Image (cartoon, rainbow, N blue to C red; front, side):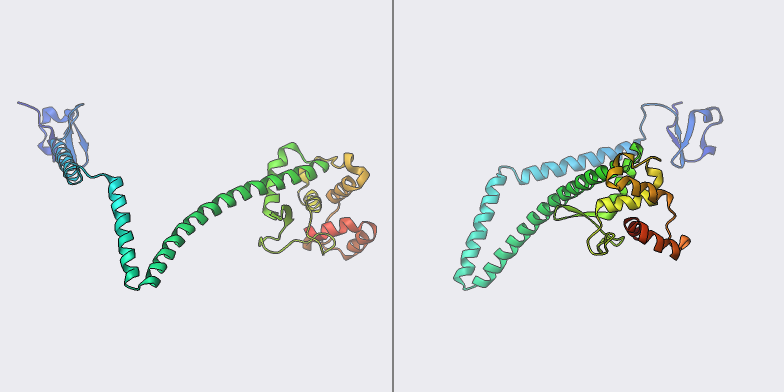
Length: 257
């Protein structure tokens, strides 16, 4: 007696054959390789036959038709219709249709060009800002492993304006001003605030090589000075003292508060 391929219920399987069947998709199938459910096979065969029939009907419908010739005929038909509309005095309608088609093409071209421009500008911005950050941070003893961190911070603050990195507040629109309160904050000034706010990014003896221009000394001082302009360490006496002894550091600490 041949084995049955599928049983709907377990109780239908003869006891001596139960080990030969596995449950799958709500039924019990003969556990054998290379066998396909006849129902599914028939469905697949029917689908393939129907698909081939559709392809043959389509091929027969378009047999002998040249797509390029069809496009040329369509263009000629459009031209003749346009001429007829002009003869009927519908110049404004023809002009409006032409302008509409040209606008669609122009919008597509503009979108493509704008996308490329924005991509190039983003790359240029990253390069300009990263180079400026690397120069300023190196002078202050940036740890080599901290470069990705400091560049990521800079990209959140600076944007390229007329080819020059310019600092903005968190909203990305308001210009962030430097220590004089008049001119936009420079990368150098921003880097001083980072020395104060994130000293873990810099070597402990940062600034030794730049002591001649005061940048290193200011950076070291910024790391060891508690910011008296911050709310948690507000100290009016220390503020006045700093403004008298080191106005530059006072301005940087105030800007970073």
